[in-house]
Length: 242
Image (cartoon, rainbow, N blue to C red; front, side):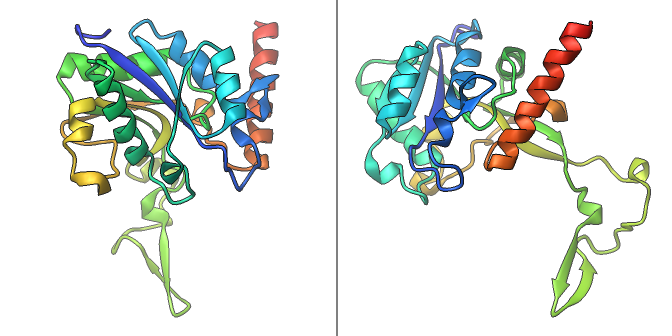
């Protein structure tokens, strides 16, 4: 609980990954990818329940083995075009029907395995301390928007009119982007959004927690898996040398 309110963590994990088959249970650092997110959720004292929403039997078996609850997602909410917010609303309705009174939900995508429990706790504490509706994690933007261009019939133009892309990095205004590691939000706010088409998890009074780039990994391809393995190996080497 946080601020006297129950907290439910949800790890959404479809079975039908196209970029990397069986991605959510592919090994990373010696354990299935989804296990990293489940372990983080179970290590956060404020989280009362850890639920995996999936349509895959293999994913469900791994999740249960790691101590998570499993809710089978309807097939219509497990397609390539399905939105995670619609799956979350469906899950909330099922939980409410069962008597679950949690007020806060935390979304932990399995593709962000290097977040830590303290990242989740920071979001929940900011939400409670400031009376916010939603908090998400950010990282420094991969590309500063002042260096972005658009091409119009082969002619380059600055994406931001008047921006100077030649400024040194230190002279550019700071820019940030969502890293997809943690979303914490009011369940009532999610359900009171703009109908079933409302897809934002950052709504109402919002807050941001900044994470370092090395923990802001988002796995979508085999190259991303290799990069994450390299970061894990580097971390292990640094701990040995310390």
